[in-house]
Each structure stands twice: as structure tokens, then as C-alpha cells.
Image (cartoon, rainbow, N blue to C red; front, top):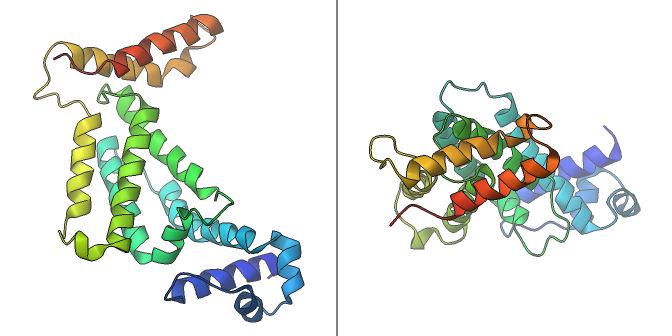
Length: 232
């Protein structure tokens, strides 16, 4: 095992065991069997080591999501993704909190990877005409809510005692971004779902039948429809 891998694995193990969620570079180097100058040569500073460690821990979770077989229903995948996200947070509290800590100056790559995987599921829903907001907006709504619930359960569990709080918030957010075919009116909801569907596949239409300028203009129009909200 090279020095970088040894340091990351040592840091991940110590982070998981830390009562306060912090580790010292001295302890990491001792556990990895390397001298401290090696750590700074490889990662630059402690912040670089911690960012790499967060990516390492998250990659195990994201790897399982990447390898997971798609179901026939993207909504089932969306629900399962939320639940596995919350479960991961509760199983790896220190790494999860560190991911969103303002003290971590280097942004872990795992954050963007998680958003990309979420957008892929939402784009499948949009392609089926089941999304009433743009996939990018839906991804930000879902991720921010999922992160918020997970951090609340980790940081202030006594304030949020409901055993199924995560599931309740999940269902509320999904209700806000999805079109319910059993209850929608034949007006704005349908138009917004159609706009979200077309917007999700706009890149696939270029360069035909539209020019780049026409495609950009159409994207603006569709985004305007989505941002108008349902009719009052």
C-alpha cells in the first residue's frame, strides 16, 4: 500500500472512532506508519487529508449506488436513494458532518458525484413526464432536504424524535416535485410537466432540429414555464 492510501485509510478509521469528529495528523501518521513530512508532501495540509478522507468514505457509499441495478420505476430508485443517503449519514456521522463543515476549506469531490447520480434519476422521471420542475432544480431541492434531515438527526436528535422523520420529509419533497396523475388539473400542471420533460432532453435534440441559439432560447422559455408555478 502506498503512503497516500495508508494515510487515508488511517484517517478514515480514526475519524470513525473519534468522539468529537476530529483527528490529529500525528495520530494519523502513527497509525499509517509514516513520518509527518510525508503527509504534508502528499496532501499539502490537514485540510487536504480530510477532504481526501471524506471522498474515500463517501466513495464506498457512492460506489454501491453506481453499481446498483436500475429498477423499472425511477420513483422507486429516487425513494431508495433518499433512504440510503440517510442510512449512510447515520452509519458514518463524523465523515458526513465533515462533508458539510465550513471548517473544511477543500470541497470534497463526492458532493458533486452525489448530485450527478441524483440528477440522473430525476432526468428519468422527467423523461416520463412525471416531474413538474426542472431536473436541476428538483435535484437541489431533494439534496438540500435530504442533507438537512440527516444533519438534524445527527446534530440534534432530541429535537427531532419522530422515528420516521426522514420518510415524512422525503414524501413531502417528492410530492412537491412530482406530478400526481390522479389529482392534477388539465391546466398548468400538465404544461409544467411537459416543459420539464422537454427540458430534460433538450441537449439530446441539438444540433438538430435547432441551432445552438434556438436551443438556448427554447431552454429559457421552458425554464420560464417551470418557474411560473401552478395556476392559482
